Image (tube, rainbow over all chains, first blue to last red; front, top):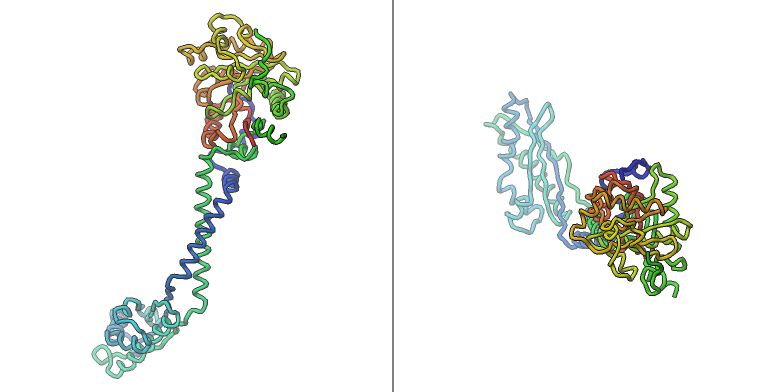
Length: 246
Length: 215
């Protein structure tokens, strides 16, 4: 009984799951998928609304030497020397007070992140100050307080001279931190979108897994899409026809 | 050959032309006849199988054969599910004689069948032998079925599940094609998909799917 007829359906039949079978399975389980999406979205948006928001706001300070640096080694150590001389423990306390931060110094330190970039190819070095807080205004206020205090400290330091009294530095706030005005709703929307995407993926996977296990065929079209073979006859359940007739 | 089918037999709802199922079996029969006329292989003997037991192969065989007879053709149904015979139960008849009797005696299977309506022969398995697989794999089995082809337009073999058909040299190679019956509420989709893939992979001439028990 070897097949000799190259009927269209056989030649068009592909190995593995095709897009039509996947869509058929997904459509058949659309209520399951929609339920998963709705539940995930509700949970995710609720979480986004009730959890403490976390804003991280940055200020950037530009730092450049007042005179020419002698060699590459001097360039590499310049920022370290400036930061090392200015960013002291005392400065942290002052920034905390100036910004009106209510927590202790350890908490303040854990929320503050300061990173520096050396001067390169004629570009000045820079100091990036980031502060994380549940209050966007507080995050911006603190980052800006640190940046401006850093500038003041550098100016004070110039009076004393760096590097053995031979090198001065100039510091200006290149960009001040700005409080986010719409961060909360953006975050909620992102959480919602993420949940929808995850729900569709999880629901689709569940639909495919369930579809293989069930013993329920929706009709000849479902059978053709599932089996990728033609249905040449549909015989109803005898009882269902007689009940309909009654 | 006995004649007729008992009035209270379950088979009536499949072979009676006034049964509510008759139009559906007629559509299936018309499709099968159309397949035969459009095929390069002359389809006379069709193996009717299913991915799992309980899909209703026997009832589909009876209903399809009844519809073919209504179309003016002659049809025979032979139960070759020697491991788990069921056709005689639908007929409401004992399984004292049938296919195995014919294989044993060498006499035509018509002698051991039941003509349920004029032009429709039904041959149950008969007594189940101790070596059912060997009987079905024998040349005698093929010759016995082929002998019916001289007198009937269609011979429907009520076969075991698809995996057994694929494993059987006679059922998979000696007859024209296979109908796969899936039951709308009993056959799992994964089993049906696997059976379809396996039949095609074995290069068996799958004629099509019959969706049985649809709501």
